Length: 103
Image (cartoon, rainbow, N blue to C red; front, side):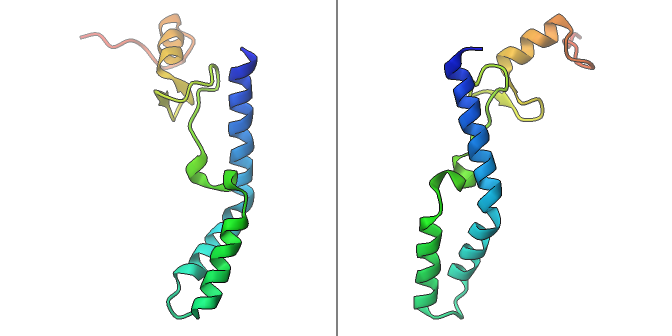
């Protein structure tokens, strides 16, 4: 695997770890912000705290990537590989239980 593709997977993994680490805090701050019974100052303070969290800790910045090539598009989530690698491995018979359809 090329260094650049490996780096993409490493960065994606780091983002996933950050997102898992700050998930509870992020949900807590958002719940406080959405509560209409709280004073405006408290809600704004929670919004400020949420903004101070690392950007990469947000789940929206995660991207499903192929574990073999680092490709971000056309990735089957169940297999965590791109459609191109999937087709290659399936035609070689390397994936158990997968065979080419014929009718």
